[in-house]
Length: 399
Image (tube, rainbow, N blue to C red; front, side):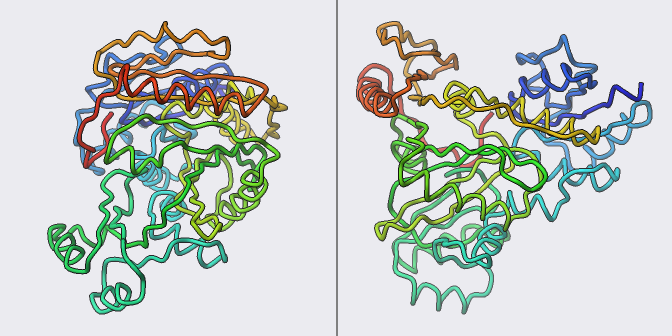
């Protein structure tokens, strides 16, 4: 039994199946703890030792009691949050049960936008000017010196969820007042217009062993609030963006204290040409980004994350597989119909037709990054007329 460590996976969303399958393939027992609405989701039940269902809305104390109860009859060697919104719960459980892994303080650097900005700024990495929503006089002085528009951001939400763009101090004070006791969980930041990039990586023993630099089409915040077609693509490995962002990203992860695992970080290139750090998460990127990267490089972030966890658990060395040098990108949008038909798109570069309820999406791959760019731009235009539906931006994440 010593050779079969047990990993407890937590998730409030339907994701992480490749991670769990890889853990099982490496000889681990996998227990999944999720919520009632995902009871019948497409979990890899054939490899799970157990599937534990919780009611939604359980408190941290109730979740702790649940896991402690499970621990009476089985020993958990690692606890892994498969989604960002479960990271703090997993960190709490690790500390409570004294299981190795990221602590609550370390997790805050990848969940709390204020914490990650303060740490990266301290390391000399450019970030948009920001201030916590705490001391009123400091807020007032900050708005007098930093030009509008400003972004009022939740400190612990992902991507563009809950962000408000404000133009006048009166708007800021009203918005803060509406938050009531929740206002200290926000920060105020200068809005920097520009192109948005994401850098996805694998980290082992504090060293970045795999990096992929990608560029979004429209900024995620614009898509969240105005709707539209989402695109992202792996950038030319010889491009100036890749050459500049790769070392900046490594410096960010060092500043935030990343030891092992996978990361998804976002940057913006302002009108001054400077790359500003926006946020980083210790997780696999959403919106099928992991699929795009696997088609481009052959590296599965989910599987490599599992391999790192198991190697660390067993005290074994970890080695990343040699990446391929192809290029890939995706186009995705909310669709008017439940199961949109994308068969009209027939280019040979299409490698995956994305299957998601009320979404249309394609992934393309080519040895030529320019071909990927041209295809995505063409598809994005056609998706607007063929499929695109728009709905109000959610105030909270949805599964």
